[in-house]
Length: 411
Image (cartoon, rainbow, N blue to C red; front, side, top):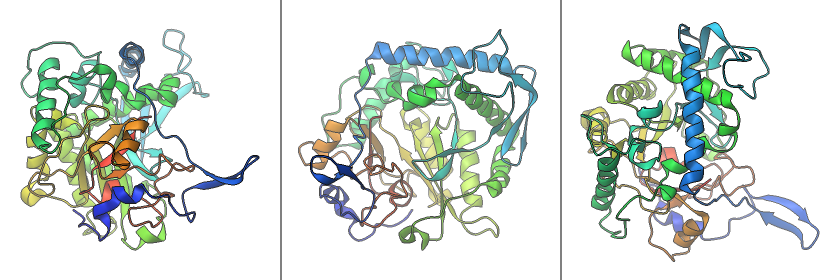
């Protein structure tokens, strides 16, 4: 993985200093004091478990109808689009109102997603445990909708045992931080507060229809060994944004694996590794691309070993950055050390409330991260318009500084 850069060691300390006006912050007129510098709050509060549970139940309902709508249909990848044959009737009175769709028929969906915050193409799958059609096996113990069973299924932990295992891993990999909670409060579980079940993601039921369609195609493609070659070819049709000068000289592109969802099994994980290998910069016509994937498969009884097998040792790729993501809001993430070749992992990510994140930056709380996502603080809300740890315009810390533990404010 990319080596540390001079000045990175105190990245968090730099974030406690007011940034210069040269980038990221937007100036707007104030009737009181003239020009002021403003930034988004970038933070939220954990939802009560009963509120988030209702949102997750809605997802289960819409996924049921989405999966029912796909029965008897063929999904075919053409370029970077998945074509649905025959098309799905969006105004069928016997199905949910697929709000947000103006066309009466859904005949295709985009293979990739494009988020304005990251300024990079990405790939998304349904969130949540497999028990309700999700691709996140590591969320089993952190969602109220998961079956509360103590039984352990081979290769996949049960609800209670996964929670115990996740806390054991966090404790065992963070000897400097002995204050890990003894249990998982669902209101403070990251998965329970997943942003995909809130906001615009939840507002339009058609989003679930599209993401379920992508997941159906993905599972079939992985099963038949077609996923990696299909993605490798489809990426040739993707437009990557121009990087700021401070990043452009690196001569590489950036891709986010899973702005929603996770590695649902080892075969799927291996397929993405093969894609990263194809874009490591050694193949003509396939420019070097750094793939970043946050994951919670470390919380399963197979995930840590799977990452070590797929991306460890001689298989290690420095353009395949797998970050173990936090399990509990305001708590440390797992630090599966040493990062890189030995484990296949990079440093973890955490999700913090605004108050806790700012306390860490100010040195008033234990240092559970090294870098706080600046895009959430900027008026533009973009990685490309935010400062890096060196102060230059354009933050790609998640991709190019795997040694830095990164925090995202709850939203």
